Image 1 (cartoon, rainbow, N blue to C red):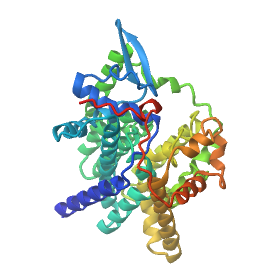
Image 2: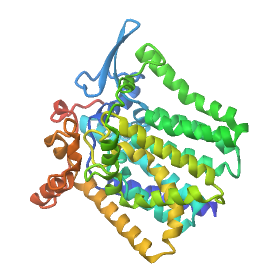
Image 3: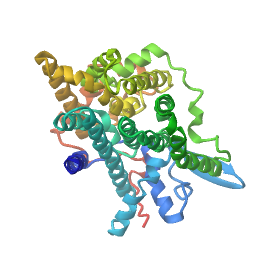
Image 4: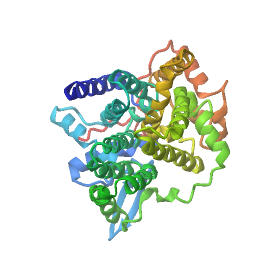
Length: 437
C-alpha cells in the first residue's frame, strides 16, 4: 500500500512538471528577477550578494557593512538558494547560462517546488479521504489554483512556501499516530517562514497548536527550527549588519490599507478574487463551518487551528499596503494558503459526494477554475497591469469590461490565439543576452 501511495505521488509530481512546463514561457514580475541570479553568485563566487550584476536593480538594495558594500535582494533569498542544484545540473550538461536561460532555470526550480507541494497535498488528503478522492483533489489543487499560474511559472517565494507548509501540515496530521511528527513540523514551518516571511503567521499558530496538544514535542519542534533560524540571523547579520535588520522590514509599517475594500477585493474582485479564480474554494468555507461544529472529528482541533490560521492570514494581508499583489495574475497574495484551503475542503467534499446538486456545482466550479488557470498559463502578460497602472489605481481590480480576462483574451484572439513565448525580465536586460559561463 505504501509503495502504491508513493507511486501515485510521484506520478502526480511528474504530471505537474510536464503541464506546468508545457507553455514554454516564463511568466513573472520584478520580484522574480533577482532570485534567478542568486544561484550563479553561489556557484561562481560562493556568496549571496549580487555585486557582480550591476544592471540588476529591481528589488535590489545596497548596504554598507563593515567597510564593504553589498547589493542584495530585498526579500527572502531561499527560493534562489535552493534553486542552485538546477543551475548546477544545467552547467554539468553544458547548457549555456545566459540571461534568457536562467529565467527558464528559475522557472524549472519553481515548477519543482510547486509540483512537490502538490504531491504532499495528496499525501495529506490521503490521510482524510480515499486514495482516489485524494488524487482527484490534488489535481484540482495543481491546476485549479494560482499554484499553476503564479507559483510554478517563475521564481517567486510562493511555491517553496507552499511546499514547506504542505510538508509541515502532513507532519501535524501524522502526529496523531506518532507524536514525534509534531516536532518534525518545526523544521518545515521555519523553512516556510524563511522562504516567505508572511508564512510565519501560520507557523506561529501551528506552534501554539503543538504547545497545546504535544507538549512533549516542544523541545524537538524548537530544535528542528534552529537551522532555518540560524540561516536567517547569520545571513542578515552578514549582509545587513544586524541579525534583526533585513530588506523586507521596510513593509512592516505599511499595514495601512483600508480593510473592507481590500478583503472584498482579495476574495471577490474579478481581477484578483480568490473565489473568482478558484471558485470551488467556496466549498472550503462550507467545510470550515461544518468541521468547526463537528466535535467527533479525529482531527477537529487541528482543523480549527487551520481555520484560525487562514482567517488571520487573510486579515493581515488585507491590511497590507499592496494587498492586490502588484503585477500578477489572480490572487498572488493568498496563494500560499491554498494547501490549507484544500484541507478545509475535505469536510465539504464528503457532503458533496452525497448530493447531486452540490456535486454539479462543485464540478462546474472546478472546471471554470481550471479553464481560468489554463488561460493565464497560456495568455497572461503584464499588459493589463501596466496599462491600467494597477499599483496606482488598485480599485481597478473590480473592472469587468476592461478587466484582465477581457483584455487578455481580446489580445490573444487578435493574434489567432498564438501563445507568446516571452520571458518577462528587466527592461535593460531584454536585448542583452550575456553568457555567465
